[in-house]
Each structure stands twice: as C-alpha cells, then as structure tokens.
Length: 90
Image 1 (cartoon, rainbow, N blue to C red):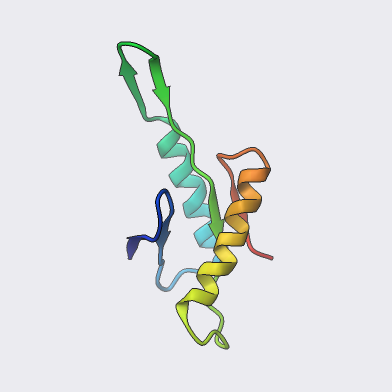
Image 2 (cartoon, rainbow, N blue to C red; image 1 turned 180 degrees about the vertical axis):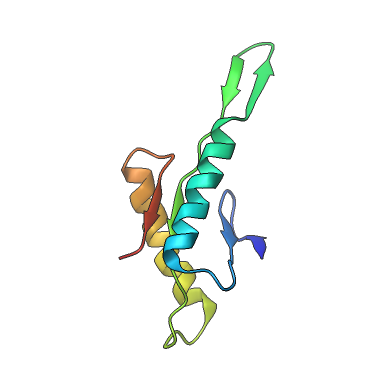
C-alpha cells in the first residue's frame, strides 16, 4: 500500500514483510531512483536521491500512526547521515 502523507513524504506499507526485508526493499528503491535522471536545457542533468526510514508495526501499537512516527524518526536520521540512505528504527 503506497500513500502520500505530506509534501515530499510517502509511506509504503509492506504486508507479510519483516523489518529486514523492508530495509532491503528500501535499498532496492534507492538503487532504482539513483538510475533516474532528467536532462534539462538550462541546468543539465537532474539526478534524484531518496531517504528512507523503516519501522515495523508492533502488536502493542494502538494505531498505524505509531509505526509511521517511528519510521519518520528513522527517516530524519537518514537525512542527517547524508541522504540517499535507508535507516531502520532501533
């Protein structure tokens, strides 16, 4: 399930997926996005990066927002580590 939750923020809910599998899927996404580029007349080649935070849904979470908040914390950690990274919530 893929959803936009803010300006430049998206959530992907991976069903029947471990946190490690989700981390690996994040690495695959980064590799795919790194291959994208747009040739612009004025600015030359435009490349893309993505920062990804990974969290799992815990049995004691009362709503999905709990997992999203943990993933958001991991996302900001990825951004401070230099962007274009995947960080798993610990």
